[in-house]
Length: 393
Image (cartoon, rainbow, N blue to C red; front, side, top):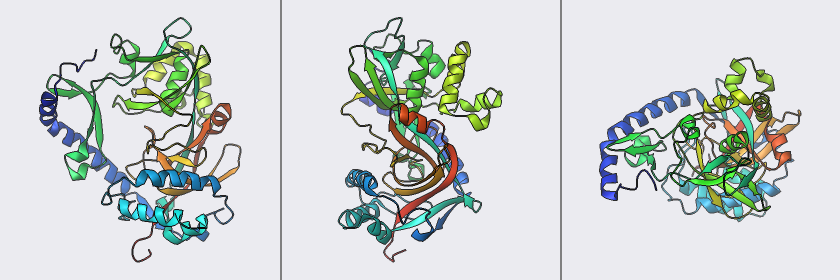
């Protein structure tokens, strides 16, 4: 049973028409904010010789990731706008570069031939900001019990995702989510309301897991594995979000003096929650965003581009500013002090990944991936590899 079971397609379209004015207003506000942010960003052309570590980099696994993204780009309409900042490019430009590079014998040389590196800067300085993410492993069961009290919910039938770009070209890339109630689109239940039972009795429970903290981090990562009582491993993935903005709860811990800013990491947040169980729920509910899941097939993890992610090659970006499938060069530092100079591909996104130069590095699954991903909160440089235009620029 769903809240929208009495909503036929004709009435659905009518209600969408009624709320169009509201959507356009909200979308225009988003456009103003995004454009204001873009004005602070400078896209600075470089030479490949300017990229630290490029000349002696091992591109082998990078080629595999690149080929996956190129395959996903091929069905996209040639005229679709896939620009980067002031550099106007269409899907045809990106696909043409893909085909030429994949047909070449020397991958690195082909990249240098058909792309130009563009550094993303703010105020004359590098604006890269990098974090890491991983695929968590949870303990779960098919039914609730004292050991497995926390549900993972599937997508509610009344959750409506509206692509504002379908209504106005200047709203392209803007979306809003909510639910239809009568003649209005209203916010869906937030995290606190869902924790209090807002989705009970609708048959949306996908699985039950052992820890609310683990489930919270699964929401942040967007996908993961659940080990069932019989040993079966089930892969779950993102299938929608309630429309409320993502809030990084680490900010609250820093502001309250609970965790020093230089010590902030996923592990630090999890440790604080385990030590402060009576306050953990309230902290998690400060992030009103809530993710819904579906069961996925296969062993790999799919990113937002729809391709299987490759550890240390797949990057989550702000898809409004950097197209999926764009090759990138990343220059930052891991928490152990090791330089991270890496060829990567824009293949995913996330609620906290906003702004040019913002990147989230995928490290794979398991404890080792968590150890790498959790502590990363580093500045650095992001360079987009842009297909050359007809003039070779």
